[in-house]
Amino acid sequence: MRFILALALGLRLGVVGIVLASYPRNWLFSKAPDLGFLACSLISGHGLSSPFGGSTGPTAFLAPGYPAVVGLVFYFFGSYSLASAAWIMALQTVFGVLTIAAIMRVAGQIFGTTTAKLAGAFWAVSPPPLWLPAVLWDTGLSALLLIGMVALAMRCVVRPGNGLWAAMGGYCGLAMLVNPSLTLALFAVLGWTAWQTHSRPWICWLALLAVFAPWPMRNAGVLHAFIPLRSNFGYEVWQGNHAGASGMFDTRLEPLQNKREYSDYAREGEVMYMRNKSTLAWAYVRAHPGDFLRLSATRVVCFWTGAGSELNSGIVELHALLTSVLGLLGLASLWRRSKTTAMLFLLPLLVFPLPYYITHPNFRFRLLLDPLLTILSAYAVYRLNRLRKNFNSQTGRKAYLRS
Image (cartoon, rainbow, N blue to C red):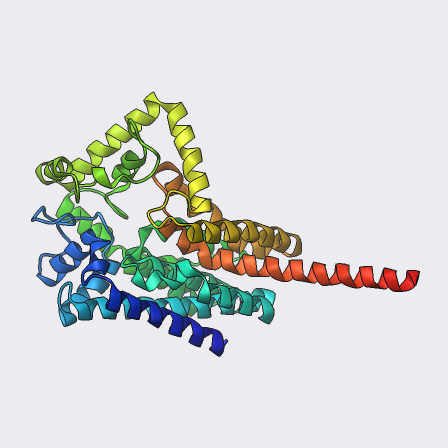
């Protein structure tokens, strides 16, 4: 395990070095300008506001957790500075190594040491996870938070107690503040844990509310609307469903790059702008149900194959197809062995992608499920290798008897 973690750390630090030495100075920040705007807004004392630049007022376009992390780095090392880029990538590196440690722990507890080493080694060297330190978004942290929740669930099943339930609730609330897209998957894991322990974990929900409730309360106070997670769902539906839509995100239509959209956003205010986009999106869906179904089918395929992503490349598609196919084989094999344990993997895999099937997929979103798929893929490889050895052994025995 130590060798795999050291290898993962060394390779990721190599990626950080390449980016710092070879890429333009602001390359990292140019990939997520809205995140940079929010971080600068926070450290300037204006709170979470103006995600598209200018001075457009409070926002719930993104949850506060990760902009606060970037803002903290900006505060100590300078906004958009080379030092800030280095520290952010260093943090992403730590998240990546911790994710591999969590992958190996979960895999080891369920499948044994061999599968754990296979899973850890794959995530350590596979190019898409390897380059996550160079992704400014919360992708690496969110992937860590989801696999960490699975690890907590397994521990709670073995040693349930109010303290651990409270920790799971607080952890879940924190993860939702970082990435609300994790909510369905986190709740699925909580439900599985309650079912396994035959518990009604009221203390878990109290801890979750204590951590997360200030966010929707803040939104109600400053935006004067009920926004429990983020304000942008209707906008994302519109991005994937409008006349001429491909089913993917169109950067030409976002306020960051489209002057007309930015003007509408600034004039109408965030709440009204998002409501208008939601109205347009669902009107289109009702008027063109066939197109919506076709686009949704395309999005399902793209989500699981890595096609159509802004990170699209042959390596990305190979990684996505490999982990999707092998992950399905591993899940089927685990289902035959233990349906209960298989549900721990199946539920997040089922519910997490649902919003992306009706909005727009991206390989960056799918990477959040990759630790689970990697464990299942490693188990599939282990089982296939065992079957191969058994087949060769039986073939050799028959040949020996014939001779």
